Image (cartoon, rainbow, N blue to C red):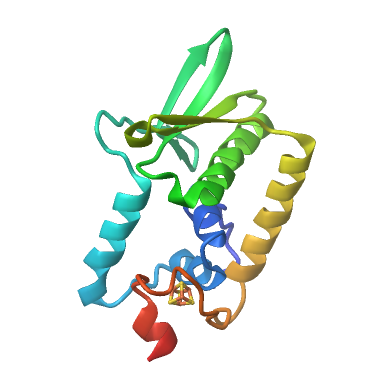
Length: 168
Ligand code: SF4
């Protein structure tokens, strides 16, 4: 990969908590087999996105689901269909809060699961900031590896579109 700047996006942060091999593949735009693309995209959208009334807000390379003011405080919201991948979603949102802070913008976060009528507050703490910094470094380490990390059989492999690539 060229040594051009790679932005650690919310997507890469998300996949870091699913599978490090996917981080490498997605960063290099290596798409799964055609037959599986819809499956993968469908699964991703179904699990992560809640598209009804959704309007994305873009700040630089960051894309939020919504941004609002609440009690005088800026709040970034990330809307998900299911809380199944809560750790990934929390870290994705924490990355947004971290990057905003770097731009001088203090914000809080809300993970919203409308279908589960669930809302989880996410706030940056020194510990979370430290974790974000460590994970960002590790994502870049993975992205710049010459070959992808070895596959590790896990619970996400069963529905993964890269299955044949990893295990055939
Ligand atoms: S099949 Fe498993 S190891 Fe391979 S990319 Fe998918 S989740 Fe990762």
